[in-house]
Length: 107
Image 1 (tube, rainbow, N blue to C red):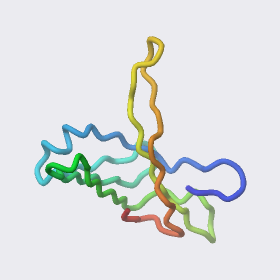
Image 2 (cartoon, helix red, strand yellow; image 1 turned 90 degrees about the horizontal axis):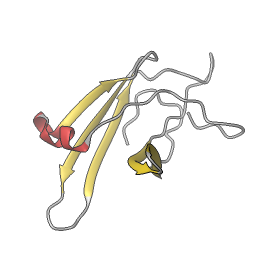
Image 3 (tube, helix red, strand yellow; image 1 turned 90 degrees about the vertical axis):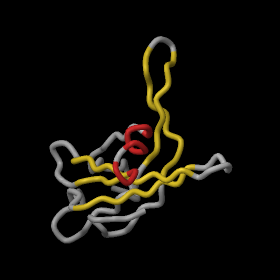
């Protein structure tokens, strides 16, 4: 959840392996968000010859972390896992714009 003042509140996370998504029927997969409710969907399309990857993400029924009278402003981050100094770490490579007041966003 995007918060203007202070830290952003986690609405949950889901991990997708690119090869698994591409191998799945329709190049799409869904993951339930652990302990928080909601589902994140990932669709990947190959782009031949250009070196680009088209990624579509959407979510349904995300947990509202804003409270009673407001709705959360979800966003997503793309990370990659690398082996650094003997341990695996996740590095953030992209952060989407947030979608205001929406618990079932599509990016």
